[in-house]
Length: 112
Length: 114
Image 1 (cartoon, each protein chain N blue to C red):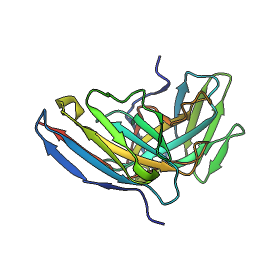
Image 2 (image 1 turned 45 degrees about the horizontal axis):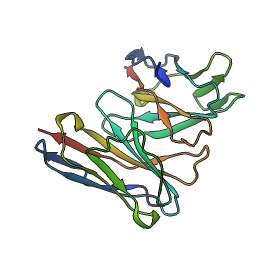
Image 3 (image 1 turned 90 degrees about the horizontal axis):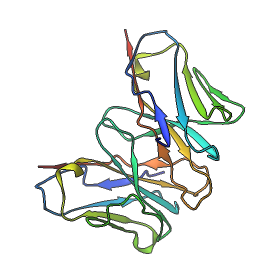
Image 4 (image 1 turned 135 degrees about the horizontal axis):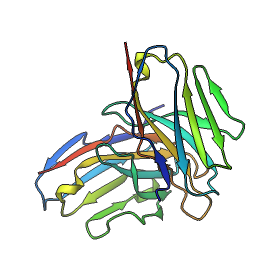
């Protein structure tokens, strides 16, 4: 089983739609979670951290479900500029290996 | 604040040749990562440094890949000899701490092995 799994998509949605992505992780002791955004042929950039209590930043909401070992990202009122690949990222537990572990990404295409 | 700098941006080499990539992290960032990203996949960690020491190189193909971070600042990643399957984007990232902090990425080096 992969450490971090995502549906690759693509998710094709019209402007203004609400879209949600899920991501599952295998290590129940994982400590920190993030969503990164990657535009075509660009480097990944942090979109938002995911806290146990959930967090919201404008049109974006991230939630963590430790019991089921998944995190989610909700995008409301989608814009054309939201078209990108969204990478789910997990910090493993403190086993001496601390690097960010990436999922394969979910591609979003927002259409006019 | 200057970001993570990488060079070259693009490189085309023939299989069995050697290639080297350079990374200069954000000033003061102790942690440096090299990731390999194959088209359509997420970044895969190759090696992680804390200052000039290696924290994790378990996924580095050590028969052909090597990396160093002299003086705990700049880093180089080398491939010798290259294979066709090494064609990928090589991303360098840095962060200020090993614990729960954002990693900042450079623009990457796009390697094509022909």
